[in-house]
Length: 286
Ligand code: LIP
Image (cartoon, rainbow, N blue to C red; front, side, top):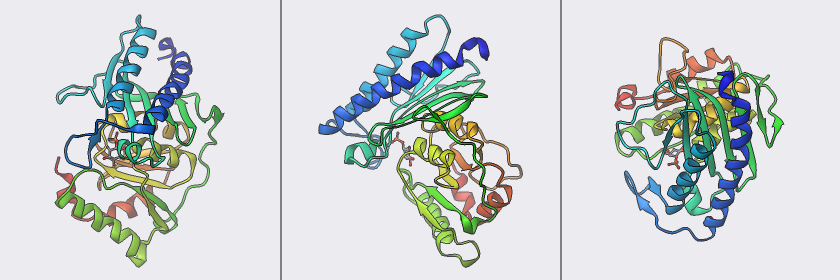
């Protein structure tokens, strides 16, 4: 991996993400061309497409000698497979709905995966001017300052601040998610301290990495929503387990679309969380 020059790639991606952030900030002044994808909560704008094309061109121009694949949210078409080859995985605007409304949890997320494992990640939130980044084996940073390695872990679910999202699924899956969240908020035996939703999966990973939240649970995000955040979380000492009850605490991988991101070794809390999940058979459906 070292011969890929991960440091050089990281150092190129940080200012590139900031440049993309500038485009996003400018465009936010008059958002136009909002198009529905799956439904009226799953949206795309001209800016998403513009920023993705900008990033793709710049990445492929900069690294022409190494054969990188590219997967981006807006140019992805069903059937494209993530392979073991080095692949840039990009969400030009994670939190598109927030972008449209001016809710500040918006991020440009650029990850590099090798063997399907995130090895470099940059998540830049232009409205907050926060840039999270990481290189596998070298550390993680926020605004270029080292992100302290996670020390405090919680031993019970009751002590946790949880992040979750409703996503764009409607119908029985949304009901099952809501039932689960209701249990987390109301059940006396495992009542968490609170549940938050930012609307950006990439930033949710960073918030757990930074220690602002203990758990992030979401079923549905795609690899571009999570790839960069994964690298940042792992380098800060956190990890990802299956978002649905499972026999092992193994990482389900960035393509799984079922994530429970935690601050380090919290296996007993993970078990408690899994027990709280309602209507698992509905949530398991693809
Ligand atoms: C969004 C995620 C968010 C999730 C949404 C959506 P987008 O990404 O980051 O957490 O709940 O369903 O996937 O579409 O704004 O890039």
